[in-house]
Each structure stands twice: as structure tokens, then as C-alpha cells.
Image (cartoon, helix red, strand yellow):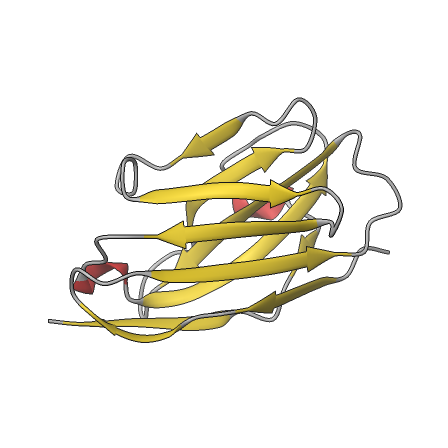
Length: 123
């Protein structure tokens, strides 16, 4: 069983930055993919960014490319989502997620989920 523990999030003005963290307890990361989805009220859960632990490939939704960066700390088994130039439309609950296997954008293909953290961007 994999447990994901998120931290970060909060309230920020448009144009500001936030960093989310997600620590994983997976026994092996060789084939593990971790990422972030978000869900705004009344909307579907959508893919934001992902990272394949080996070889470290990263993937982004078009809406966040150039503004968000996903990275990892192998020693801490932690993935980070650095969010810059935040916009009001980025407001959502952000969920850390993981799966054994390659990158996919479909949320129900991910078996493991964090509890979610609220990100609110004011205009």
C-alpha cells in the first residue's frame, strides 16, 4: 500500500507563487509515476503534471506549461509542484497521485491519492 502525504497550498494573489509537496511511502520507485491533478467546484478532475520516477521524465497540461514545474527529491521520496504566475483559474483542490506504471492522463488509472490541498488564487 502506498501512502501520499501532501503539504503546501493556500491563498495567493494572481501572479504569485506556491509550492506543493507530496511525500510517498512506496516500497519501490523504479516503475512509479507520481503527479498532480486538480478539481475545481463543478468541474471534472483534470491532469496538471506528472513525473516518471525513472528516468525522470516530466509531463504537463497545456494550461500550466511554462508556469508550473514538477520535480523530485529521491532521498526524501518526495515530489514537488512549483506553481508560478498563478491565475484565478488555477483555483482548485490539488491532489497528489501515484501509480505503478507509465504516465497517463486519466485520473482513474492512478491507484493512490493524497487527501487534497486547497489552492485559491485571488484576482
